[in-house]
Amino acid sequence: MSAVSIHGADQILRPPQDGLPYLRHDRAGDLTLEPGAVRVEGGRIAGFEPDAGAAVQIDAAGGAVVPGFVDCRTALPFAWAPDASDATILRQSRELAAEMLRDGTTALELRGAGPRGLRLAARLAGTAQQATAITAAVGPEELARAVAESRARALSLPAEQVREHGRLARSHDVWLRVDAGEEVLPALGFGARAVEGLTELRAADIAPLADAESAAVLLPVAELLHAEHLAPGRRLADAGAICVLATGCDPRESPSASLPLAIGLAARLYGWSACEALLACTLNAAWVLGLHDTLGSLEPGKHADLLVLDGPVEALPHRLGRSPVAVVIRSGELVHVRADQAWRVTGA
Image (cartoon, rainbow, N blue to C red; front, top):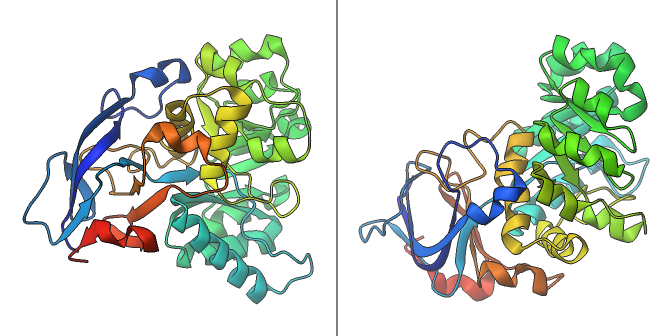
């Protein structure tokens, strides 16, 4: 595995301190954006100084270096036709995962609905270039088998089933992920790792959600396309919630796999800064998937999942529909260089 030196960056996005599992959004302003370099050795971040002897040199001039994006809410694996065969579902899902990687998503959730979906999720996890975590969207009678066969990390439940089945997550050592609608407090009472579907969140529930170690997962693509009420993203951030941003990638509800698009929409719909949006789909999203110890922020010793953007972080919300990702590195390996950005890379 070749050593990599990324040098000359106008901005390096760093957390305020190393070792944080997440960062509440009222502290997003503590993230730093300073010029600098990143040194990669053995697939991990080794330091923040240039290495003239590294085999691979990447010129980040005029751009930013940020952690790889983490998409913690997708419906993968799926196919566009509802009656598709397993082979078609896997082929189309692999193609979509590869597209997501080119757009900077270096880790993602795979959600299996029922035994067949979980089997496909496990097979997709074995071939995807990204880090993956599987969520089981299954009935309570199927959970033990789902965990054993797919190594599912989380159980997804609709809000109306939380009181009845919420204890299952604890008994099977998986995290609870709740599609909450209006009911948030029961999910918090059962220690939900993430609460999703917050377009109907009651004002009185913002403070309890912000005080909990439960992430508020926001899906701006779905909100925009379905003309729903907007989730109170600004109020949740100001209250200090663990805000998380995801595509919700689904052929019906949220037909987009682009986290750069979701970042731009979050800035427009919630009034978030670019740094707030980046925090929501890097460190905080990694925490939702239980990957925060190794991914989600630029820290010595973490896996070198990182992106070189072709411009400053502040430009992210202003060019919707365009990928700003020039270079993608996954576990220290150069996995994508945008054609017009090839000049940045030597020695690969």
